[in-house]
Image (cartoon, rainbow, N blue to C red; front, side):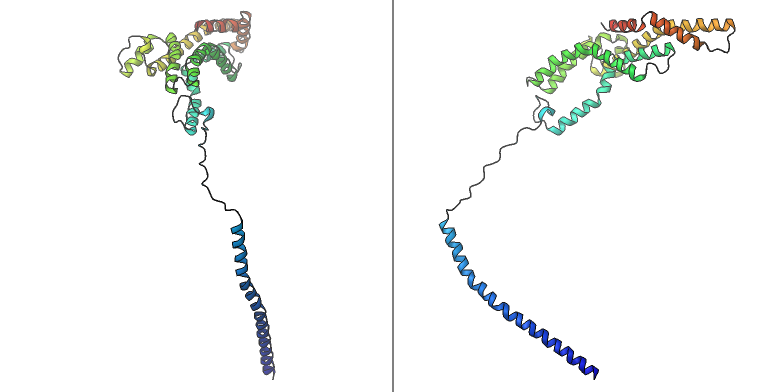
Length: 288
């Protein structure tokens, strides 16, 4: 009995669902028919509106103007077809070569060597500091190289900026003042050494020496000059050390290090003769 009642209830539910589906389909059919009937009227209205409105013709858009050169100051004047990325690469390469140029083509190496010899002669380990000595050497290097830099600016950079010469011509013009400066302080012995090592023909004059020979010969000459000045500067203070050491030994002060007495004496001697003024003046006159 229970099974028959369950079957009857299931049949009633199925019949109810069928009746709901049939009612919904009967209600949607008139709406679809109405939409189909209204389509021709809508199309006719659209055609009448399009006929009455002025016709717009599609003309081709004018070609976009060519973009201006966006190289800006990164492009080197006088170069043809230079692009911004290559200009950036050249600029960054030049920046990385600045320390080498500063050491090999300027008096920076000689000045720094002399200042380090002075600090060792005075018996001072960290005073003045390395940063102070490097900064002093840089300032004096800029002071000495200012005429050369001004000549390069007037003869090379200004014509290139005005578009009168190319970048390669500007580099050739900038080489002449630097060559003249280095050839004035390079030794013939060092030039002959590198000419022999490079197996190049002997130049008739210093103007015929290539930069490949002149650069190492110049830095070698600067090292020799720096060590010569430092050695001469070291001798007076060495004499003070020897005198103090001999006095303390003869008196019997064996437990007292001589440097404890000699360092103040050397500082006092250096200040009494105005050592910084004499040293800087002598170094600047050596580049006159």
